[in-house]
Amino acid sequence: MSKARLTQGTPVSDIDPYSDESLILPWPSYAKLQGMGSAVWLERYEMFALTRYESVARALKDDDVFSSASGVMMNDDMNLVLRGNTLCSDGAEHQRLRRIVAKPLSSAALASLRDEITRMAELLVDRLFAKREFCAVADLATPIPVAVVGSAVGLPAEGREQMLQWGDALFNCIGPMNDRTRAAFPKLEQMMRYATTEAVRGKLKLGSWAEAILDAADSGEIDPAVCPAMMIDYMGPSLDTTICAISSGVWLFANNPEEWEKVRNSPALVPSAINEILRMETPLQGFSRLVLSDYAMNEVVLPAGSRAIVFYGAANRDERKYSQPHKFQVERNPADHVAFGTGPHACVGLHLAKLEMVAIFTAFAARVKRFRVHEDVRHVHNVLRGFERLQVSVE
Image (cartoon, rainbow, N blue to C red; front, side, top):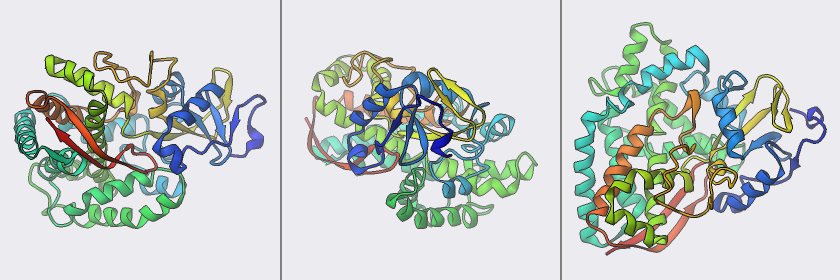
């Protein structure tokens, strides 16, 4: 959209939220944008930035105006790739697709997995506690999400070892068309080929979540052509965001030992602490929406046809919403955080992510007095916030 169409008084900024510096430490840029207004035009990307909690929540809840059907990415190429899947749809179509993907991910449906995930978490934490030092990304945060994808989602083993690389590429392709996005597209193409040629009848685990998508196509609930794109709903989001959240939790507890002491003394605080982890270190920093009609976001009018980037991570650190937003407080229990989005497109996998996190940190609370960080290397990524490496020790 042309800048000429902006209404008089629209805040305009040359801030680049996707520079390496901003991705590593986004809070100063977010604060500047929040101070400029309810919506700010980013000159570099010709899109609006929504960074205040109120603005983000309004956009996420109003899919009549802030549409996902034309894609939720910050580049047109990726919006074309995933058009028609659950993420990139609206209204009745979205609800129809969502029912299929979300059915095995409801809190009730996951009850059968709870004991298994708890057992996996206890065994994993026992093993790492015995080692005393480990990488909180590769050794702790990765094994359980990968095991769940392999078993419950039911994808064929061949090629599954590339799932982490594919998921990382998928999320990088959500960002604007920069060097990270361009470098990720070849891996995304591999992922799409796998979804098209391997995630098919006869190669999927019988009775698995992925097979249920094919069952829906056979029964006429969905167009068979969208099955590969819908497989992506399971292949990427079920891994990377949870891995980021678990490792970020360890980092936060290591840097705030007094908060970990509270959890150790009262393990019932684990769910509250997890909400605070997700608020503080939101694993997926944002998506975008296409504005279908002129919309007044308080003092700023977003013209029809413009695109707005909805920054979840900024909203979760907005001082207008949360007191002392940069302070980690496990007793805060910010259940209204938007790390999983909100409204019609709230993350379908949120119950699974929380189940895995609760199991891991409950197991730690029974065994570990303190976490210490020896090396923390941020993963510079367009939309994921996490670590490349996080070497820690436990006492």
